[in-house]
Amino acid sequence: MAHFPGGLSVEPQRRTDLSTAGRIIYSAERLFLARSVQHVSVNEICSAAGALKGSFYHWFAAKDDVARSVIDDIEAGYVEMLDKYERAARGPVAKIRATAETVGESQAALARTFRRVIGCPLGTISSELAVVEPAVAAHASAAMGRWHARLVSHCRDAETVGLLVPGTDPDQLARLILATMQGMILLCRIDKFPVAGVTASMNRVLDASLVS
Image 1 (cartoon, rainbow, N blue to C red):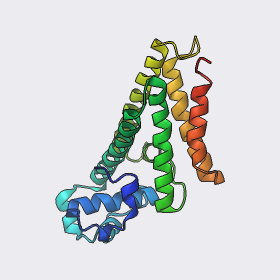
Image 2 (image 1 turned 90 degrees about the vertical axis):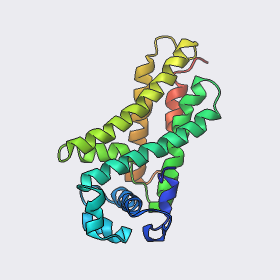
Image 3 (image 1 turned 180 degrees about the horizontal axis):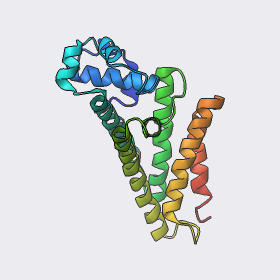
Image 4 (image 1 turned 90 degrees about the horizontal axis):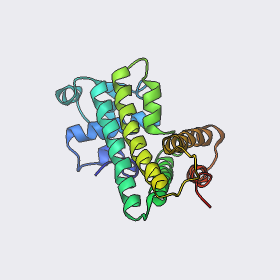
């Protein structure tokens, strides 16, 4: 089960259920989300995890390797939430709305843990490291791409059964829903809008493309 997002609320040194490597990943995830990958040092990760620096390098060749593990945990958390909402959904439109529900749940959980809106984790990591650590940025982008492909599939299914307004491009609709997500999270972060508005805005984009 992924740490992301709800499981991140516990302080690392209270996580006696984790191995040393697990505590390092968990600590790094909390620190990266609270600040950024670039602005967190290996020493800080080790201190938060209660691990020796030698233990860090026993499990990870560099901070980049931990960052990839953090990205994997974030993706796994999104997949768990998407699966949960999609299992309860009937039909492609309800499955599209599962993405909006997943974003709402994850952003609310992160805001409770960090006491502020921190942005879209995969998008933030991808853009932050695009130039300085392109391999890690590509790892985050690939995870985002798999989420996008899942949403595209549901949008195409909605088109196939005639639920979209004629002429609506399902691939473009999926991109627009995710772009709305990114933009609204950014507004919540900058202008202190409530995160509940993200889900509502994503659903409004979908509603505008549905047959009455």
